[in-house]
Length: 198
Image (cartoon, rainbow, N blue to C red; front, side, top):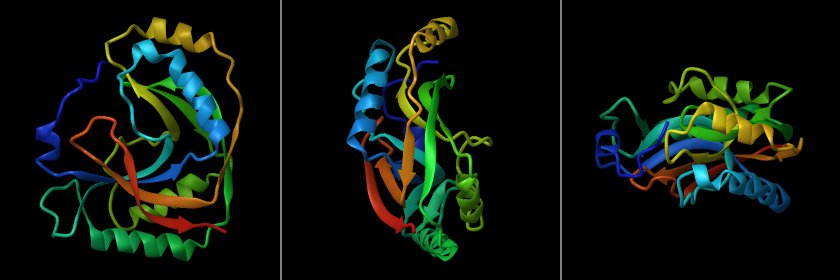
């Protein structure tokens, strides 16, 4: 499914900062590997894609200092409650693993394995404050890009199967709350608060 490369005023209603909890992808060698995968599919994907590689943990909605007007508003007071809950968990560092390349209807991604189910524990704690603004089924992943046209699934699958995928470990020592400008498609993620682990 193609993603139209334009503004979505009916969604953002003039609001800017769309908040999300995520895990930053920092190791240069991992970023280089993801760049190589992305380049392999560059002719299928929307450019530019400025958003940093990350693993989404929990989508909160539009960050606001005012009382919520819409069901996808997320108040600062709610963020502070989530931060307190995460800090009270006293989580240790943990490990994730890159698995295979897969595809949503609108995006190409690398699946993430969480053998210890740590992400589920984190997400359940965040749900204590507010329901997530997202698809009902959580699939941990790193997005490689959004499709610029409605390509056939056979074409995408054939390209995926032609690649040899590396099983790379991801060490997680902090959780980040950040936001992106909802009026810029695939714009940068801006970190707002980090919870250190260990």
